[in-house]
Image (cartoon, rainbow, N blue to C red):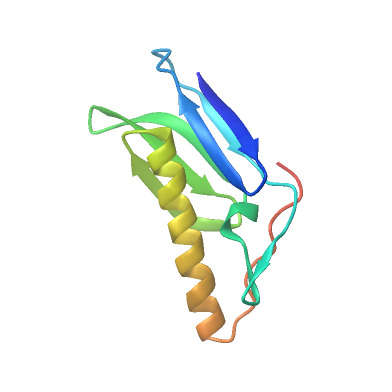
Length: 107
């Protein structure tokens, strides 16, 4: 089981290995602006446990960035990698003068 806990602007995941696949949908309700950028935590990050080349990993996908997929040994690490990917993508889009996708309001 993966448990989602939220406290103000910080979010954390607690992982308990239940020995089965599970999916967690992570969604932050409020949009926080930082230097004219959307906070990466505002984007929808879906986590699930998958088997890749015989290894159990956690997969983090960002709904608004379909090509953003990260894999890690823990749910927390996969989530943090996805946040880093969103942040880097937002920076590149800003540098290119492009409009980033808005965080989706529906899970």
